[in-house]
Amino acid sequence: MLSKRKGKERNLLTLVPLLPDHVRLGENCLLVERKNWAEKFSIRFLKQPSIRTIKLDKFGAFVVERIAEQKNVEEIIASLQEHFGEEAEPALPRLKKFLEILEVNEWLKWK
Image (cartoon, rainbow, N blue to C red; front, side, top):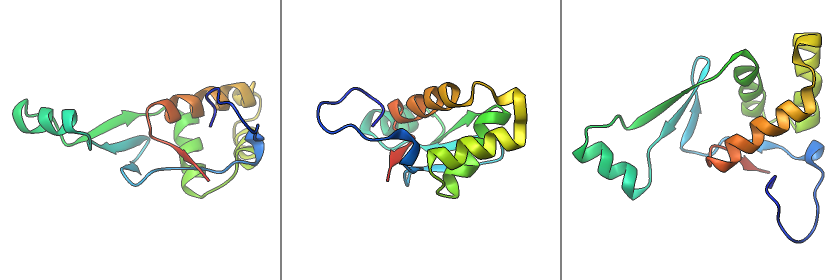
């Protein structure tokens, strides 16, 4: 969604980010199951763990908790600013970049 696509433009603030089935919220981290063939190969033959742990800072953990609550981007920004105040500024560009990173790694989908 955030990547450059041809076609109808959608308003980021009204979109609802969701965690896919293979991503779960841990304590200040994301737990990502390894699903594709290369990852399954590395689990079996290279003895890699079957779940990746992605550590999050306090802002990232807060945002992912709001994503799990199925809040839209505008509500997430408002709660970020309310909870962290000036420390969260600039909230929108920061949140947009975080969501782009999650989307590129396929740890996020859009509703």
